[in-house]
Length: 320
Image (cartoon, rainbow, N blue to C red):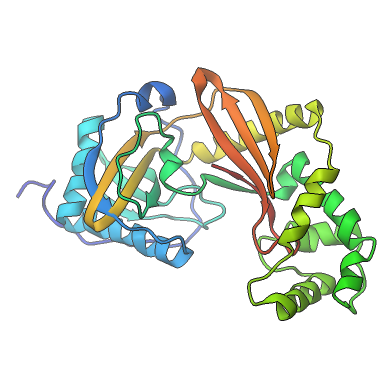
């Protein structure tokens, strides 16, 4: 039997810490986007993390079992790169420390794949970034960016340190110092850890509903901040190595639009890196929206936002 068609044992996603292989095969993203072929298929994607894990395992199983969908995904890869995928397996590493989703074996070597999917069945545009079907390609904690720290300081001064939230919600817990609040609440990639932060989240949701937060207070914080040219220059210096560190872990990108059990489009992209950032612009909406313009007319977006409830915890900058 042709090894391309022969089913093999499925190795689904596992979580463990391992090292990463060396850098390979970097290509210019703009030149590739303009010439990438697309294989038409279908697939549905939910946004919940548990469903995303199930989606990735479905792709791995489809490749290893040589289902019609798996063969089409493999054929799409061969049509672009001229080499065959022979096997797939789950990612090794933690979700925050590992910036790819699963692995495929190509020419006897394991390659790291970033998957982005959308429930909408459509044909991607020739110049779409490979993450256009998904949400973001990197989530960076606020401690990594001076811009986020400036926002955090303003939020603390406007609402926490001066007692505004303590009075508004009748909090009994003592107000933490800025340093404690930033370390234990603001930068936490989880629920707040200070007694103040825990009580605040509890009482806001008791008063407003189980998913409520302090969304209405974001606009006033942004309005109070003067973002300078120095802020932009600093952000460029900070974001470029962060973006490239995440991109360097992705040997290939798989973008799927639609339902793997029905119609979907599957498009493969090669590894790429950002050579330089030429300009950034800030737009004050409810969150801070950032446009990042690079060489070769390539640009991507970034968003400064709260991840675990506005004003509670997990202030972050997403790269999209």
